[in-house]
Image (cartoon, rainbow, N blue to C red; front, side, top):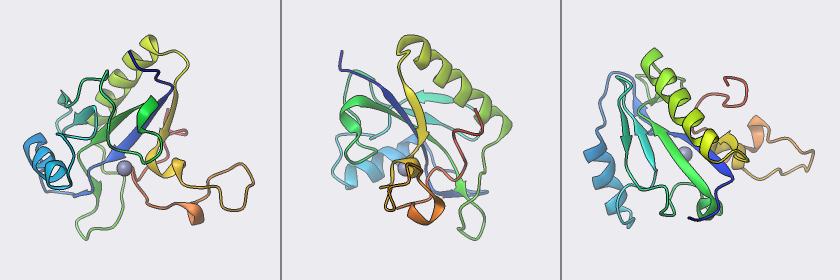
Length: 146
Ligand SMILES: [Zn+2]
């Protein structure tokens, strides 16, 4: 088993009201040259949890952090106009908690963060601020919502 000390949360950047299946995700990631879905878990709008890649296998979801992390993506993240929004449904929030707690039970030393929290700390103050975000994914504050 590879060393795992980080769990990264993502959104699929899907507009509210639209559906984006694991099949769509797989097709798009293969088009980007990945060997299947880059995330380890995908959480649908209805809360369904899909294990999209064995956690033993390195993911393709957070540049520079893939080797020692697990990637979890939820379906959504954009409002109907395409603007970033925390679109997580109650079942999705619950499923996220379930997956994260199971992983934390197995990998106790894990830090949990959002994709955007891995942006470079440009001013070196030890905090990744909104103006430093390379992208807004996963469109909610992971630390505060846990
Ligand atoms: Zn992301």
